[in-house]
Structure formats: structure tokens, C-alpha cells
Amino acid sequence: MLALLCPTCSSPNVQKLDLFWKALPAESPLRATYAPPDEVASQVLLALVATLAGIGVMVSGAILLGLLVAVGGMVFGVVNHAGVERYRVQLADWAAAKLCLACEGLF
Ligand SMILES: [Zn+2]
Image (cartoon, rainbow, N blue to C red; front, side, top):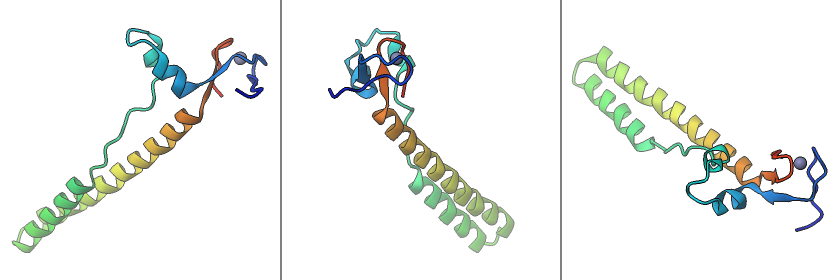
């Protein structure tokens, strides 16, 4: 490893966080502390189905109920998409993070 120093304590004893975490034994209590962010699954299909179902209900006559279901499906899709994007950013940050083994600082 290149001369990578901890910005907090200047220790050269620095490791990539993802490699450190993967090397931890399964029973290590540190696994929870340094774990990657929880995955947010994409539910695009579910949102699409709800929206289409709402449109279907609307066409069948129950306009207000159908509108509610369709809008609910769209809102759910937008919220879910934002969650997936946030997860991707957090995972990239986690994968790029370095851990100082001297002062336990993350940077
Ligand atoms: Zn340090």
C-alpha cells in the first residue's frame, strides 16, 4: 500500500474498509459496526403494476378509488427509486472508505 496516512492520528496502519470487513470472522461483533448499508431492493415492477391496476379500476368506473391506487403506485415508485439511489451512493462511499487500525477513524 502507498504511504497512506490516517488524517486523524497520522498512523500508516490503514486498511480499506470493505476488505477489512470481509476479512472479519462471522462471530466478530465488529461486523455489525462496519457493515455495508442495507440493500434497498428496486420495486419498479410493483409500482408499475399498482399504477396500471389503479388505471384499470378507474376505467371500470370507480374513478376516485382508481385514481387513489394509481397515484399511490406512482408515489411509491418515486420513493422507492429515491431509496435505491441513496443506497447506491452509501454503498459507493462504504466501498471507498478507509479504516485506521490505530484510532478506528473512518475516512
Ligand atoms: Zn488514525
